[in-house]
Length: 189
Image 1 (cartoon, rainbow, N blue to C red):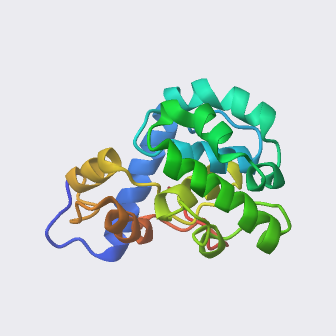
Image 2: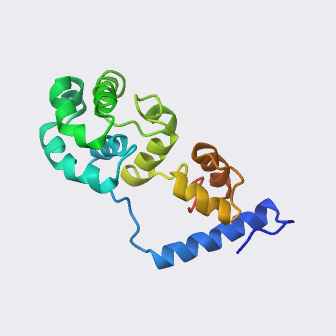
Image 3: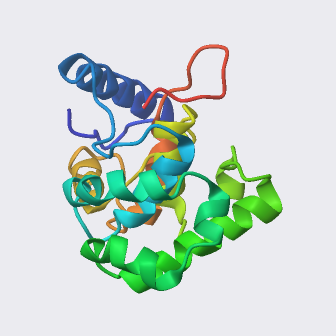
């Protein structure tokens, strides 16, 4: 399934559609490895997942989600207490600062709810394109992009879907290759 030298954009979309279909068939129940039950929990877990494993995040989030149930809870969190709860995730001081900032912004700007668009999500502290894509796809059911980490970028490069090695750039260049769902602006991969 290597990219041909004369592949048109339509050919590329068709090839990506075949790749996506094979992946969906092979992994029909694929989902994020992060445990969550609300969009806020998914947002928090994804912020915590930076530079650590999903399994590590899943070990600390049950206690965190029991204590902090709403955006207002994060906004009013005691920094030292929140830091202690997320210490195992690494970069805990910055992550705590971001979580408290997310809580404040959600309360002040979004009525305490997780925003529903990529542009609004990316306004939140600690949220860049990858985090926004994960939240959009996993918690909100809106596929507006591909969450690209170094592993996805490497595979996308090997499949000839992008020439970019930077995950952020790879996300932006690979996504247009995904075929659109009929009668929709949503894409299938």
